[in-house]
Length: 148
Image (tube, rainbow, N blue to C red; front, side):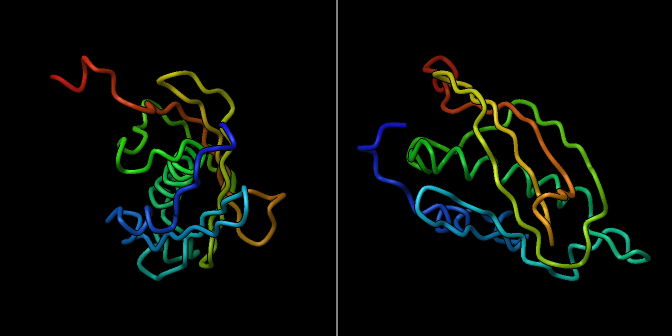
């Protein structure tokens, strides 16, 4: 990413996405780093016996974290369209407790149209993630795809 591009307000972008808003995801943007936050709500519980966060919520949170990182890095925002997931693999490492969850993503490879991203989610201790994701994202539709 070139230093001349202006950074976008990723938190405002996340609040414009109804699903991210419903889940309660916000973005803590400090300098050149962003951290996504999944604010705990009783509605996010998938197993009330443990209790544990729903796996689908954790997966959606990791995907949203990756999209937020891509939007932050490439500053296209909604004008160019948000990055679209092509494939996403999630590793569930431990149960998500009924508390706030944090996420960070790293772009591991980036081409003209596709980027590879790794994301992690943790709660109390960043060195003990509850889940990790590895995904490929379409950065921008090709002219052929946009016309069909």
